[in-house]
Amino acid sequence: MSLKLLAAMLAATCVLAFSSSTPNQVQADLANTPILGPGGATSTPTPYTGTNGGAEDLVLDFSQTGPATGTITVTGGTPGGSGLMAVSFAPANVQGFGISFLIATDPINLITFFYYGYDAAGSLTVPGVSQSFPNLAGTDTYIQAYEYDPGAKASNGLVFPLLP
Image (tube, rainbow, N blue to C red; front, side):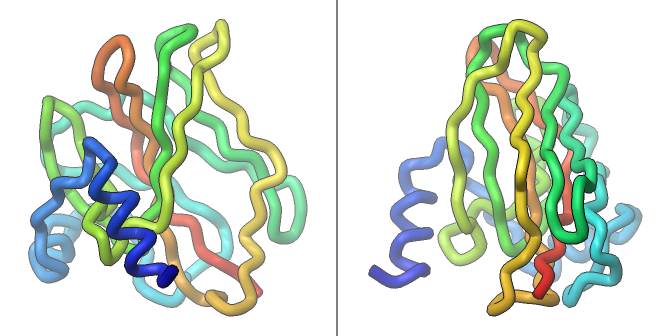
């Protein structure tokens, strides 16, 4: 199964897959957003926010624990609530349902997503995340977390550069 076909199947099942922005619109929307360009201007994952007026109630962050590894954390969720984290090849800046969608969720750009539950403090910790992907080194990916139960919330975005 090809990566594009797999991404298309994942996007078709994802409630959040409705971004219709073209790459030029996305770049124009992000003109005032501190985002890294293609090829990774830095090797450190960097948070970014949208300019569309949508809420970003969750906080998505990355803390380095090694040369190309670290921990992703999401805070601000509802204790025991359900969330979804998505990874994309492109940013976006779209508002819907009162929240910001900061990654492209179209079938060409969506890489993957996974569901998770928040702990009793309303947070998620994902340790041992590697930035090392030799075949994609120099590529920026974009990550965003969402809460969908009991209500809709979104996080800031995270530019996640891939390294050798």
